[in-house]
Length: 76
Image 1 (cartoon, one colour):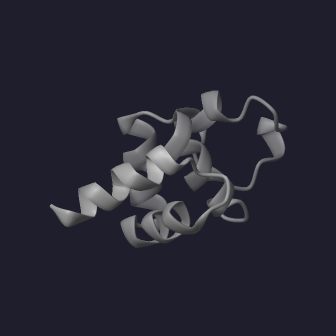
Image 2 (cartoon, rainbow, N blue to C red):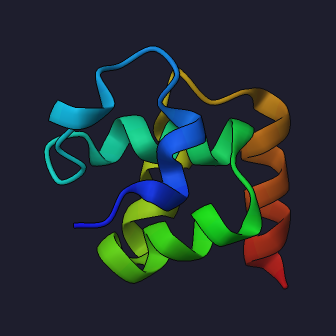
Image 3 (tube, rainbow, N blue to C red):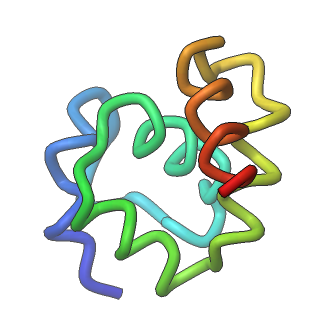
């Protein structure tokens, strides 16, 4: 799986050995807090919108502001 689009989010992990399937929750947290639209779309394509939303809204690693944003987004 090509991880080049998310490489900038992996500053503190060994990129060469990173398993995106194993660390889907980690990626959802990082993309929600620090990602861009291309990284968000990459996640949606690989793992799905529902997986992302479920993680972001329940994660202790996601800020209140980020959770509020996605809750508002879902209302529309």
